[in-house]
Length: 94
Image: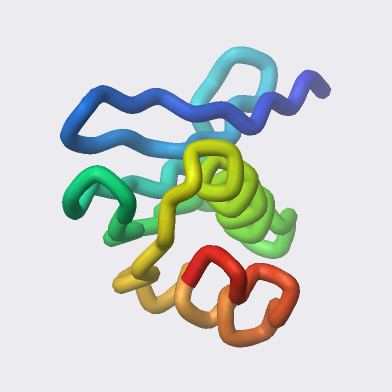
């Protein structure tokens, strides 16, 4: 099984994703809110992949992206917000 956690974006919006053997199995979308903030607005995991931590892996990727680009994250998506609430080490990007 070949798992890739990746990122696609432009100057307005983007998404983090999990691909398994070349097929996108999970996606977390965001929009830019000014030059220094992104808003995570939706997380979706394909049926059959619940419990595999795909959502948390995408949040981790978002945190690394935010730190690298000196961005703050506003997690409007209930799933992403729950991950941030349970993971105090991610609070630096909030």
